[in-house]
Length: 75
Image 1: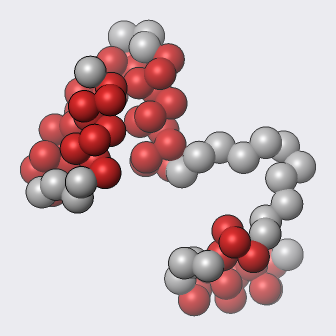
Image 2: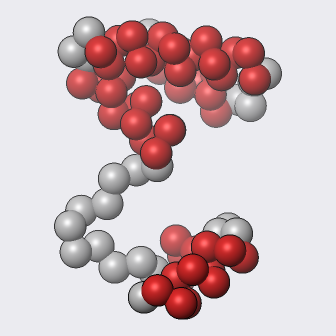
């Protein structure tokens, strides 16, 4: 089931489909499905980086200008 949900997410479906998929993933995650929780959180919040992870130039390739400004001012 997770493979099908991820496939739909990767194919740029409609907003309604994305909401329905996230709702399914959230229900699975809340029921204790760890894989669903990971997919849900990775999509909603972005992949979790290990403690001590150093941001690289590759991480910033598609970052909005305001993110770059914030990093320059705060790091």
